[in-house]
Length: 194
Image (tube, rainbow, N blue to C red):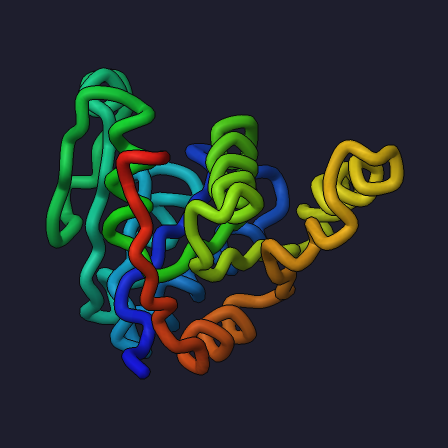
């Protein structure tokens, strides 16, 4: 089976207060580049998404940034990525990320990162795709997210198998090892349904 070649990494436009978050993002980008995996990010040069891009670029990897035009004007777009795709909306950005990716990794981030993560997990719940989703729980960042999922399951608002829609790993090295061992999920997803 073909190996994973391109992975979207969701992560904050901020690096947070704990240096381990940015260090993990840089290490993930570097590790993915060394494994021959193309990194797809939100296109920014700052925070977690900038760190993962810089890590990959520093190791000679390919990085594709996907940014909506209004954010390209408002934020500092990464000028050194291998390719920058500018979309007309946030929704177009997410759809393009989905189309180009074999898997998804969530690094620490804020509301936007949570939005992207919940949406890609929801699409799995709705059987719109079966692509792997990995949550990076560096420094315990994902514990509130996981507690929320467990609460939703416990209260009957999410299916009991909801935890199977994603994996949780705690380091860049573990994530790269896992991605390198995964085959591409061949599926005939109707992107128009997204």
